[in-house]
Length: 322
Image (cartoon, rainbow, N blue to C red; front, top):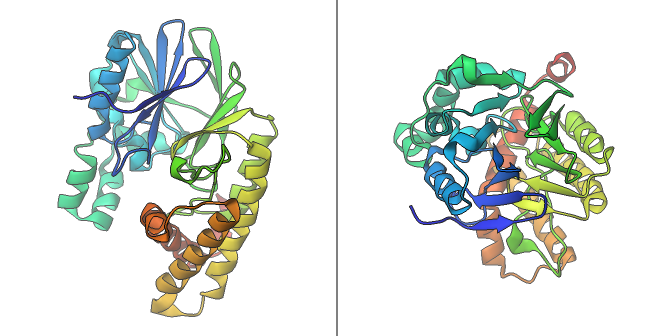
């Protein structure tokens, strides 16, 4: 396995490219504290040989990988968890309480993804996902902590994108590992050191009220950086938090305008989301050709539209009760 793209930051933090669909779409974050390591998210099973190569490159033994931490159990974040547990025999899997049972018995998780992708495409994209021994799974409840060789990692329950989502506050770097809660930010859209961030409303648990609350909760810690799975370190967090609030509201407004359009909703919502993000990118100063922008955003727009449709179809009581 060739060495994947690795980006090193301060405080022993690195981003390992998960090689998911294209370069710099999904990051697996590595935290190293005095020779002991943790991973935050795993990519898919096909990402793990790259992780092994990165650890070897950094002279980190597999026995020194102490934790595999999942921000949530969507398969671009958790699809490689079972392969990690096979290869890293001393590691514990740290996961939100709502996601733990799906790691021990992934049948429903796999069946749901196969219903969307089909069996052949699922196996091509995600490979094999097998049950993980319950004895190696640790449920990370809200405000729970783990100790990484003297380094405190704090878990916060941060729904909005998914109800099984944690964000992890690293006190040493004063930064968060945010999964999808603090949006998506592809490095191709950076302009003069300023990032472009937009929300992910993908199926099936988008909740705008909870999303706003989770962003505010993260910002309450006044973090220096956020490490997003898509894709890695961003600063300028106060500006991005305000932008995410605005864009979440804009996504909701687009969905509500399409509510009565039946079978046409996906097309209407997708076109409006594309127009919204293209306009915001232009205001951001992005000079990429529109064809390249469309290629970078097409999957996110499709998933965001599907998630908004699912949200429209849910009774409001569903989110008040959970």
